[in-house]
Image (tube, rainbow, N blue to C red; front, side, top):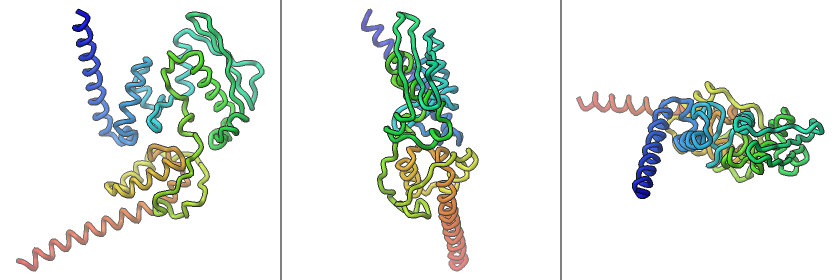
Length: 271
């Protein structure tokens, strides 16, 4: 009987995985989800199901797939913890430079206190980008993530809060090809707001099936900004890459026309 149950459980798991794969294939047919990649969609969906989150809520802004790991927004992490009956209270001593959170479990009454400060961010080398614009929100997110890992690991199940992976300090590795952007690769690029979905789609169409150039672009933004998708690209980088991508696209179009006209001319000459 026990062996039969194990076999049955294995069948259920395999069927569930197959359904997830089919779902990924369907979503990949749309530009919005295609940018996440099949691996990213699969990881997010499976993680969402494991923690009781609607997969579509996770895919549409609740979770992100970054460097092989899943991040979730602070709002979703906060919601998950509270939906289990646990409590999180912000200490009155919290201010614009430090966030202190008190957590208490609903099941056994265990408590824990965690904090995160701007000084912590500076020491970690992450005090930039959104930290400069929304310091209080970023402080809360990091303090919450610390608290969750210590007191509510069964709720978040290994998830990172948004930004913990993607906002890590750049690797400072050399760019494979300076053709990815018009500027010299040794120049430091300043992070600015990300591009729109329409802009990402436009760039995606321009790059097209030029796999070598696509890989070059993705390697560049991955190494410099920890971005995994075109839409996560900073605007200043987009504005530098766009003219190069446009030029390459136009060149491919010209070559295609030359090939067509050449074929027609040959057919005419040969009768």
